[in-house]
Length: 196
Length: 196
DNA sequence: TACCATACATACGAGGTGTATATTAAATTA
DNA sequence: TAATTTAATATACACCTCGTATGTATGGTA
Image (tube, rainbow over all chains, first blue to last red):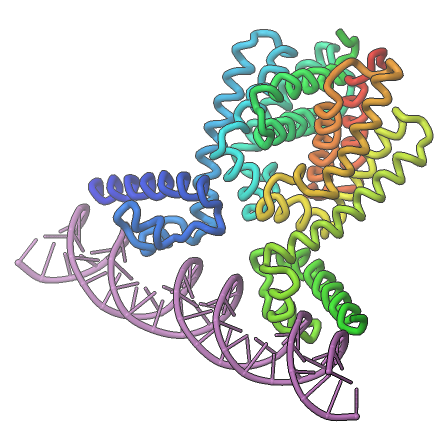
């Protein structure tokens, strides 16, 4: 009961890795499961056994990318030291993450369309939970207005993601990025009780 | 050169109308073009002649809904009289619009995934143009901070749309709606030079 | 060694898209 | 008005893809 589990885990990893590439390059709908499995020397038999169906594979891919994103953004925010600065930094980290084509295509476009509301995804909500608790701390410290913490967290990350999409789609990302982050910071100060 | 154009326009309208229903209920991918055309007494021949392909039909549907949305939101903002209040009202109008299932499924989920970046769509960008010019006026009036107008407009509408998605996906929309709009107003004040 | 469970391969059926060809009805022209 | 052309729609076909049902072979177990 060792060799089998190991090879199965290896095959799952191979499939997820191939799917990340295919979904990112061709999009979910245009990715053929036949081609995808063949690329790693398997057939659809392995796929349907491991992930149930095509959606299941996408869910696994999204979960992997998503948790990587959450980890990265959380780390960035934590490193800022101050809670308020951490919130801003975490948002900025999100903006930059959406520049990655893989993130854009899989997590921001196909994910919601195929899997439904992102706020229900396990890793996404865990990340949201993190910013929400930061917001709660800031409200308790009297630094933020007394608004609903979840609402604030959602709008903040929503604004960040939208900024990211804009940056990513623009012809001159490097030029637009500072404008986007500046506007993001300005918006965020709207949550402060005493604006800077 | 009259009878033909008229019947063609009628058929296009019929197809778009049927597509709005099908796409909203089943989603884009799960909608069969055979069934859809049969529903209005046509075949796929008419469809491919008029719209090129399935994507073309979605594009037509999105444009219709989208321009309806833009018109509605713009009207709401205009009715507010004051520029600043108009900006807030327009945002709130967007939030409410995303409660409509048709808007959610077609414009917010499938649209971006199939047609790409929404900010490139004609009607969407025309609406953005409207809020952008409002922002520019407010900056000229010295009411808003001197930030990039397009960035501000995008983040504002992005925050509104995200709030809308949250409200729409929640189990108790009527309960969440006020929280979302309150947080939206708070965020928006971040753009003001002298917060209220 | 014999048996069993299961991870994966193979084969099959249903359905969907897009295209090429046929048809029919309207518009034009003589 | 009759013939001809144009073009909007119908029909038929080829190809692809997904999901499932069945087969097979290998690793674990008694």
